[in-house]
Image (cartoon, rainbow, N blue to C red; front, side, top):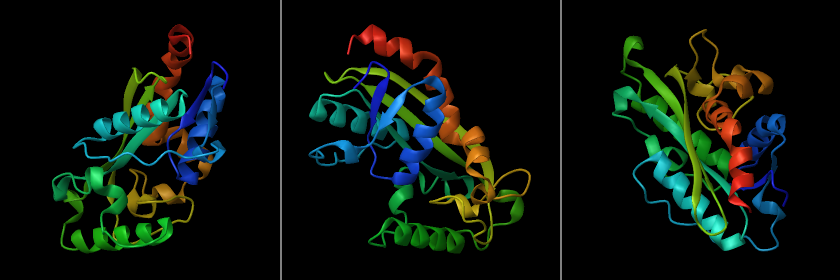
Length: 209
């Protein structure tokens, strides 16, 4: 890979597309796990924070592949649920074989959990924590982004994944009702990536890898 290229530690094609589009502005090439001849086994993400899980993934994939690696851990925090689903966002319901099935089950569980919560107590936020690790396992950068909103009562919109159809923004649209361009301009992931873009290129060159 070039000095301005990173391996993104995710099997989520939506996430790969989003990160690739945002980092292209900074001339940082992003390659996915599908470019590897052999994909290393997924590490156990047993940290209690998004940042901790991002670090686990970045270090594990970087050392296993010998490539500079970017990993994120992201999810939804709902105030009325004491921060749940939090780090368990991806498998909140514990159901579903495919990504789409899991998303549907997670959203259905969240709708049920929030059924009796009044409008003024439905505040929530998307959180994204990023970590970049070098092949020797050194963490060279970490950052965080958030997007504030509230939980809706029904699914709306088709341009998104995960909890996007339930996440209502201040103007009343759900995250899934935004265009890809609009979402990339304001999402929790784009906020974290903007921080990363400011310093990552020079950190990459300084690391000498």
